[in-house]
Figure 1 (cartoon, one colour):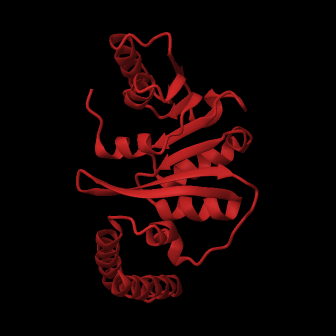
Figure 2 (cartoon, rainbow, N blue to C red):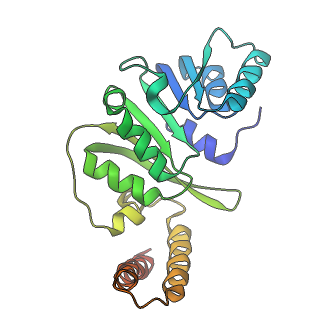
Length: 229
């Protein structure tokens, strides 16, 4: 069973524990890999849709791991109880949706030792929520898979809300401080993206002009960052 670059990045941030839950498991690849590599003793593979759950069940049976991985049908963290698992993986969903999943069952999230989050879109929205809601960012790493950058964030609840410079929601301070191998290329990608968006805003409304000011701040900070890398 081959594992993609982005899934490998998630796995690399897993600390060995008793039970891990993969929320939105799709084919069940991560739970299967974690069990086979002895990174957890048991796993829960859940999905809100029946099709992916059935695919995961089939793959789990084919790997002979039905006694180690339980499949559950349901949305978000509603499939697990507080303190039932030590770690949760939520990947492949947008930043807004991951934020809402956490907030919907914050009681479950607070009970975890840690969570691995890998938003497919809007990582800046999720990061802002993480800081303001009082989570400790344990680690963050970048990867590039199938022409797309992924930000993988390892967090734990510590009830210490923080207000960060908006730029660090866009480009993680951790990436910069740890000199992530992809930070320079990622900053260049972000700079091109935001310059394009900035130039496309032609509307003269107050909200559009406010957005241009926000984008200009990010563009200036990205240019400053690239001079230091």
